[in-house]
Image (cartoon, rainbow, N blue to C red; front, side):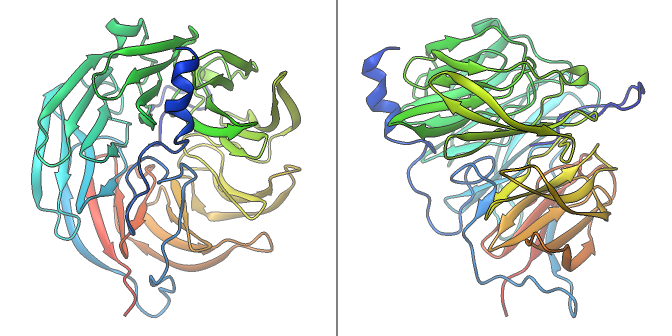
Length: 415
């Protein structure tokens, strides 16, 4: 997800949202799982964690004919986006104090299996995690800290861990929002401390830090022949070594209510983070000496969802959910290029050089990704209610949801 939290102007609103021997395990894969098949989106922000899809051949111009709804189902309250892999779609929701992990047919919305467990609701109830698919298993995390490893084909529980009890990690005000990261033979969580588990058993490999949790997810990257992990807990951006969890650097970054809610974006040896509540964004240089700020300003204030970085420019929602404007800034300088007020803050991804977004108004839209101007190629109203979750386009279909739990599949296959 990743909508994570919502509070503004003092009004109470809501949220969302071991050693050298391990080096060989983590260097094998900074993205986590094996290379996905065509038309798959198996994890939060896609196969490489950037929010960018390599899919082509879909219909982006809706001016003459808006996309048709193929199906619509109820999955329960929450902000969990979808993952699609192996011919199955996975998402999560909560109904009357019970969480459900859903496995659906992506073509029809029919239920293949579901796994349910008690999970006490709270302000804006429901899961924030997007399921992580890794081959024949899927990992999920509830906002209360119920971590499951399930068989992807059947939903059978392979193992489970109660995160607060196991790692002394206190849920933040609006619940855990981390989507687990598969990294070689490890499963990595950002739950305040950064935790690495044996993905086959759930047993702890290392735990690093003692921060309070933010609402983002970890991101793995390579630098100088070493695998590093970037996180964004309540304290601020942090980078650790994947081999043993040793901290490389951190920076204090204070956001109201501790709502640091995005997954860091890394390009080369630089890292971008942003937060709402009029805090802003910054670009850091990552080195063996830690994190050094290259620029900081208020041109991009991501409240609950990530930007995407495309050809040197960042595209995202600047401002609070329901209010923030679609905005483009330059990555290296932070200079604002344009801002569009008719599409208010929800979630977005990038496909074939175009932004696919879900606005808080319930409109799904396609926008050309260019720093020159905001060119809207198509928009269509599909949902009512709170719409803050990232849409996912895969296999010529766009999957969108609202907080009440309506999951919609739009057909954008080329004719």
